Amino acid sequence: MVDAQDAAAPQAPAFTGGPRTYAGMAALVLAFILPVFVIVIPFLGVSAKWAALLTTGLLVGGPELLTLVAVALLGKDALRYFTYKVKQALWGLVIETRVGKFQYYLGLSLSLASILPLYIYGYLPGLLPEGGRIPILATADLIFIVSMFIMGGEFWEKVQRIFIWEGRG
Image: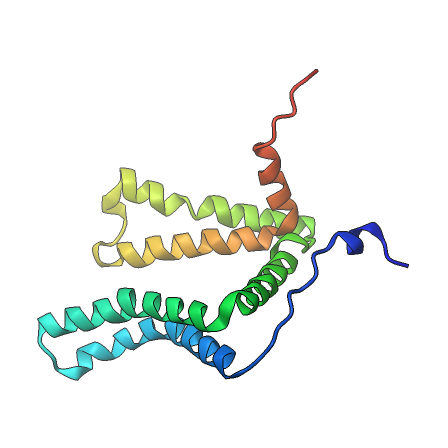
C-alpha cells in the first residue's frame, strides 16, 4: 500500500550513460579538482606575473569553463538526474535527521561560541594574535557551518517558521 507521502515524492529522472555523459562527468569532476593545483604554482619557479595568471586560471576561469562544458556534454536529462540525487542526499542528511536534546544544545552552543572571535576581532582586535587572525576567523566560520548540521532538521524547521507570519485572525 502506498501512503500519501510516498505518492507525493518526485520521481527520479532517467539516467542514460554514454561517452558524452561520462565526458561531461569527467569535466565536472575536473572543475572541482582544478583549484587544488594552485598549491603547485610556487614550486614551478615562474615569475610573479605568470604565477598570478596561472592562479587566476586555476581558481576562476578554468572551473567555470569546465562547468559550462560539463553542462553542455551532460545534457538536460543527466543534469536533472544529478541535481535530483544531490538534493535527495542533502535533504536526508540535513532536514530529516532527528537529534537528541544534548546534540541540539551542543550545536547551539557551538553556533553561539563561533560568533565570539568575530566580536573580539571587531571590538578588541589586540586580543587576537597578529599572525593568527585569519585562521581563527576561518575556523570560527567553519564551526558555525558545522553547528548548523549538528542541530539537525528540527533547527531548520524553526528557522523556516521565523519567516512565516502567523498573525491572529
